[in-house]
Image (cartoon, rainbow, N blue to C red; front, side, top):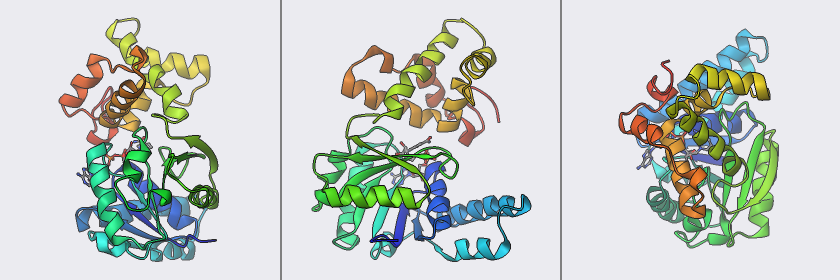
Length: 283
Ligand SMILES: NC(=O)c1ccc[n+]([C@@H]2O[C@H](COP(=O)([O-])OP(=O)(O)OC[C@H]3O[C@@H](n4cnc5c(N)ncnc54)[C@H](O)[C@@H]3O)[C@@H](O)[C@H]2O)c1
């Protein structure tokens, strides 16, 4: 598998869990680190449940499931990431928190290890310069749900070496994904194009143009999208979506990126979408 054999995943949320599953199923040794051991163990339990579903569908056998699970180590210690060839962080979308983590990873992960972020919008270069190895830092942006979605955006900050980008592209390809290379601009390709649409769907709901169900039905039936914009916001997470819009607005100043009040109020109320079982819809 080239120069990457062991992959560390930091964060046990929606995306961290998906990344663990993708990497372990693709044959990589995986160390998943959460702030609590329970959080890390919950990721393994979630992956086990997904693999069992695949067995029930006849797409996987028990020996394959056991082999995938045997490749995953769950921990609450950052120190267990020391030997990783690549570490991908997928913690909360907050630059200060991510920079702090990169500074810690710098001290722990072997000198030639690649440190990557799964950020949706934040400037990757800001994380790179929080380390002593900015040439070994890049973005590897998976989509949600990671096991299903084909695309990975490999993000090249000004500081990254060609070798780092080449390894990141090879890793994404080894995970069975279609990898594209993109420069370090907020939202990269997909979210920079997607989020004005999602934000304007919430605006349309605020203006009473149509009900939430009808807005979603319209975009499914009228554009052949697999899900409507409000259901998609609930899937992404409303807090993550708000952070993405704020980062896009901060970078480009385009009013289409200025989060509409309803989104901000839902987040303030703790209605974060599927993960809290309440967002635009109830789950
Ligand atoms: N949700 C999506 O659709 C999506 C898609 C692609 C990329 N991303 C990116 O992935 C990253 C994680 O998003 P998510 O949707 O998995 O979020 P999430 O809310 O499901 O998970 C966030 C994780 O961060 C941890 N965390 C929170 N505060 C922390 C702190 N101070 N220090 C360390 N860990 C902390 C939480 O315990 C949790 O494990 C973000 O950078 C996000 O932009 C999200």
